[in-house]
Length: 114
Image 1 (spheres, rainbow, N blue to C red):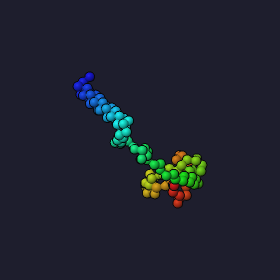
Image 2: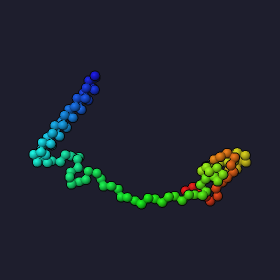
Image 3: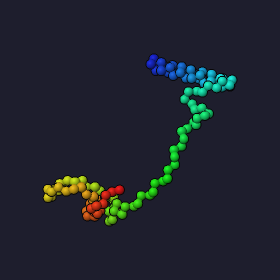
Image 4: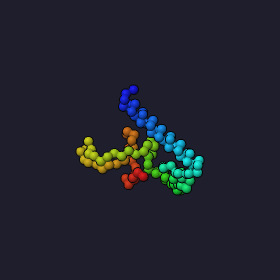
């Protein structure tokens, strides 16, 4: 065992010993009727735990979105980012499409995910 480790172990044991002595003194004082509250512990006047948070009404179930999935494959729509067409070289806006290759299904143009 190296000296640094032994020093740390010694310090821990000394602090533990002092804590036990202090606890024994507190028990003796309490048995004599000389109650002194221990710092950090709740007294009889204060509750040991914080009050329970208020109970809120549950949130309503979300309304199912009829356009949230591809009607053919039942997969959620995939956002295709805006870009430039490889075939025509023209730019296009972002749009939603079915994630299944070859599927031409699209949600309505004004649809946005909830």
